[in-house]
Image (cartoon, rainbow, N blue to C red; front, side, top):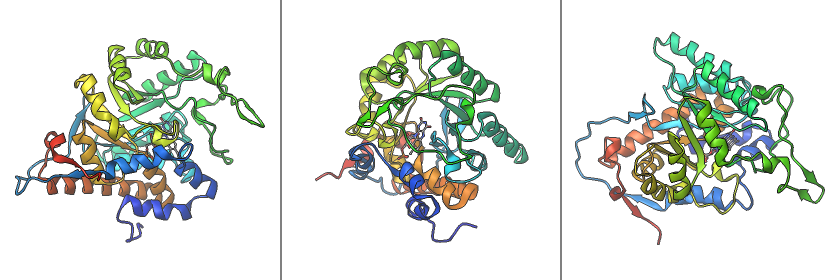
Length: 363
Ligand code: FNR
C-alpha cells in the first residue's frame, strides 16, 4: 500500500503536492510574509553539526516520561487544523496512526472531526490491540466568550484528553483558506466564528474584536483555575515570558513559531530554546516544533533542552499521500531515524543528548 520510494518525510512532502488541490497545498506549506521564519526553521537545524562518541555501549531506548505518561519516543503529532483537507478520514486516520504507533497526538480546536470522535476512535483501536490509548491532548483556541472556551475544555476532559495546549500565537494570524464543502470546524458548531474585519485596502486588526479576543495573561490565569488538567502553553519563545508562565502554574511549554505562519522574522525555536531552558531551570518540560523532518533534528532539539518534539505539516503530507497507513509510516520513519541517529552518535539514551554533542556548522 505504501509506494517503495517513500523513505523519508521529505519524500512524502515531495509526493504530497500531487495529492492535494493547489489551494490546499499552498495553505499547508505557506509561511507568513516573505517566509523568512519558515526557512529559518529548517536552516537553524542544518547549521548544527553532531559529534559522535566512538564505540559507545548502544544499549538504550527512545522512551521518555512526559506529564506522568510513558511515550515510546520523544515525538508527538502537533495540532493541525482541518485534516480532512488532506484525506477524507482526516483526524480519524491520524488518531488510528497515532494509536498503532503508540504516539501522542494533539487534537486541534479546529479539527474537522469532533474531538469526542477522535478520542473514541483512538480508544477503540487501542482496545483491539489490547493496550491503552496513546496520550491525547486537546489544543485550545480561546473563543470570544469564556463560556464557549469552558465548554470546549469540559468536552475535552469528558472525552479523556490528558492535557490542554493553549495556543497563544495564532489569534492574530490573517485568515487562511476558504474551506471546501464538508470540511468544517465541527467542534465550534453553534459558536460564533471569529470575525475577520477587512477592507479592500487590507485587513484592519488593531482595535477590532479579533485583536480584543487575543489571549492575555488573565486568560491563562482563568484557564488555570478552570481545569485540573495539565496546561501547556504553545507559542512561548522568550525566557522572561516562559518564566512568568511557569509562575502562573503551567505544566509545560511548547517553544514554537507556529511553523513560521505568524510573525515573519521570529527566530527558529532551535535558536531560542536554550535560553528558555536556562530561564525555567527544568521546572516544566519544554517541547519544540517547527521544521522537524528527520531523526537528527529530534536529536538536536533534545540536546538543546527539549523533552520532546512535535511534527506539523508532515502529518498532512502523509495523510494526503496514503491516509492512515501514510501517517503511521511517517511516524515510523521518523522514529527509526531517531534510533539510528542516537546509535550513530553513541548516545543510546535521551539523557545522553547534551549540548556538548553539538557543534556549529555555520561558517
Ligand atoms: C498549524 N498549526 C496549528 N497550531 C495550533 O496550535 N492549532 C492549529 O489548529 C494549527 N493548525 C495548523 C494548520 C496547518 C496547515 C499548519 C501548517 C500549522 C501549527 C502547528 O501546530 C505547528 O506549530 C507547526 O506546523 C510546526 O511546524 P512544522 O512541523 O509544520 O514545520
